[in-house]
Image 1 (cartoon, rainbow, N blue to C red):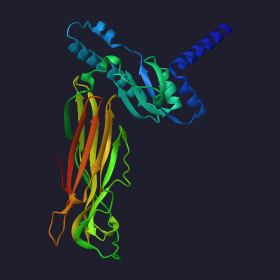
Image 2: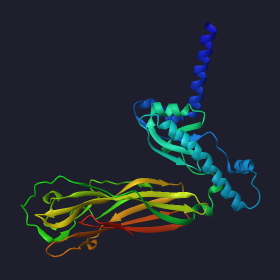
Image 3: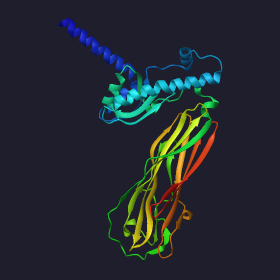
Image 4: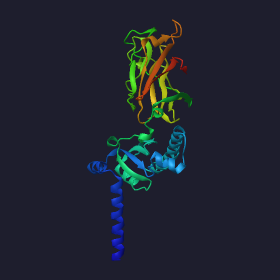
Length: 340
């Protein structure tokens, strides 16, 4: 019995030693100081192969550019498989957020409680877990080449269906003089929704309206219907064919608001981010603008219909390249929406 006790004691000690080696000491201290908190961490996969080792495994010879492309493809396949395993493991845990794969860094980042992080560190597929903000996430120098930093093509893909729901009517306030045929924007006209790869959307402020002059609140109108557009994916790939930037946007707005049965107006129009992923070495900044010149009456003088254009503008930069793009959401008070 004594020998069995010693065996289990050694086993526990070995387990603690292994986990201590996997968990970065700065992370260990942070979790000890705040045991009930959540931490943004980066977990490195066990198969940390250099590009040279991959080339040896695949027996790649000859043209350097072709070999480099094969290495990138091998990295993607290997670590997408590892990411699939990690996602499946984390789906069984509670409190996990923002799981993202970093292919060339051979790692994944996520935010989770200390208990989950320790469980990940115990897995043989993981070699190191560290605080994300303290760890430099970048690919091997082999990939820091002109081809990595140069954009090959951009795709804008529409997917998903529009949805629409009615909104309960409110009592209209007639304390101010309202002019139905004069359409104005009573909310914000310009906002940044991505800055240096970080979403900074504030949907309680970053919205626009096209309502009658004299209106101070959308609640002075009735008949509102809520509408959400389908998703639009903006995807950039570099010369290796790697997806280096992906941002998925969607429009939201209320339409069909009327003043005492007159007109069709718009309120709370905004653009949201449903997904965003930007690889190391690329910087994304984007904004939405709704200028006064983009708010018009597309109906008649007696029965106004608000029209609005929301312009999405983004800039993707690397040390070698500067790419800009725009996308226009055109909507009206009848609930029509087009994107171009």
